[in-house]
Amino acid sequence: MRRSSLEPVAWLPVACLLWASLLGASLLGAASCKSDKAEERCAPIHTIEVPADALSKELMASLGQAQNFHSKADVLIDNGELEQAAATLAMIFEIPFPKDAPEAEDVMADTRARLGKLDIELGKLDEGLALVDEGIATSTRPSFYLANLHTVRGQILQAKANAEAEAGGDPEAVKSARVEAIKALDQSIQINEALLNNAVP
Image (tube, rainbow, N blue to C red):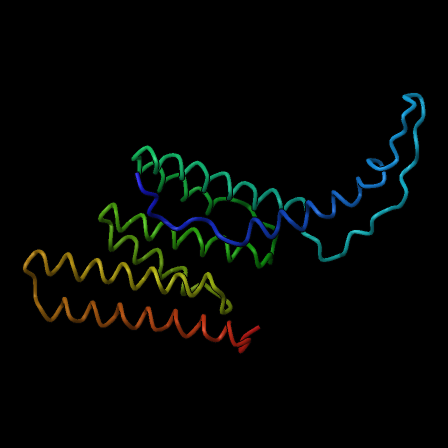
């Protein structure tokens, strides 16, 4: 089955790369000083100074747990178990992130966007719209993840308009939903343009 919901994006690979680079550097001395003589041992060449703003073990564990739930959802989606996939993704909202970690907001927004896309396939358009709108309302800064929430909002509104049209509903309601979909997509475009132009931090 084609994987239709948004894949987890940049937050985890970047975090893992930073942590792996720090760990790898600390092990470099030990790895490079192996001797041909089994009885010989050598001390580490140097000690790595971990920067104060490096990702904590607690944050890495939280990010890793979110990735686990996304990966499990991937398997469930491939197996056609969309309801179970949605329930699995919803468990990410229960992960305890370190206080004030900006990555937490990104992960939650990413998860809401993916759930919103999944709700389109499940036909839960009102539920998906409410979930996405909550994510938009609680976002504290412009980001790709916020832009993506607006994108998914537009997609949900488009799906609502199409469903209304197919059911022979009120043409004005269909038109209104499509207008709102365009507004949501325009908002996403504006946020991404600002990010590309370095207009926001």
